[in-house]
Length: 102
Length: 233
Image (cartoon, rainbow over all chains, first blue to last red; front, side, top):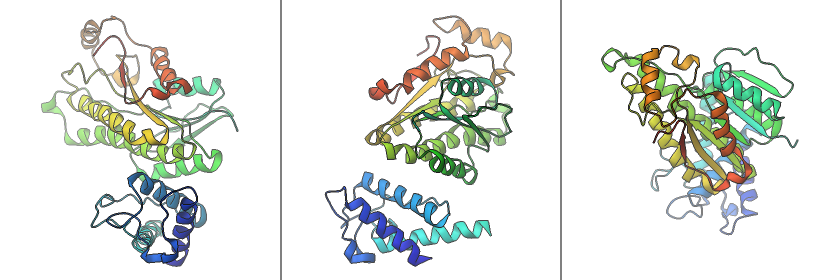
């Protein structure tokens, strides 16, 4: 599951890079900074990316998941700090969602 | 598909039902919802039974809209509940129920609608507030407080959603003959009417007129506004 979600996140980042000036360094894969101290995303960019990932997870995996998180805007504790932390967080939320439906 | 896509909450009866029938007649593809099933049927109407504050019930509705249409032009957050009671006789279950439906439900629908509207960089959201707030109506402390919260939500979401081409406004009906005010004594209704500049009951058409203004393509500079009917400020 984690690999599938990682691919979805990478695809969404690549798609986002096509229209953005400041690019996410997708080649760094999981260590690529997204949001926070070293990140290239501002809060509006982050919102757009998270929505795209939610919709892609729904379309490709058939799982409706909300990636909203109370720590989203925290520069220190945000789960959206890097592609790796985002993949881990999204994987956790998908697994939680699957458990609800089991 | 070129027809406008409009989502209306709480449209089994009352103003919501009137709005659903109106926009269906106007050729919109209308998605409606309420807790109980609706007997309204039309080729361009889809009804969902759900609790507006229940995220696990609401998300599939937006998933269906996104899959079937790929877009959402209008959201009309009409669903709401009220309770007329002295504060000292108001149980906490009532307080929580009113805030869940009126505030949490409105927020959840705004959030999910904006995710779809953002794709097209266009959207119109209309929330429902009430004259009970500016009039500080006795006996409606919790209801009025919940509608004040919706007014604040409207103003802040208008700012947060503006970069996506989405406007967020609110209409505040004066008393309109619906089930919502069914438990309010006539004497109380008359007292409210006397505090209006235009001393008469409101109608569903009055509410529709305001909503039509907010939904217009040309209203792209109109956001964060609260419009109360009857001359109340």
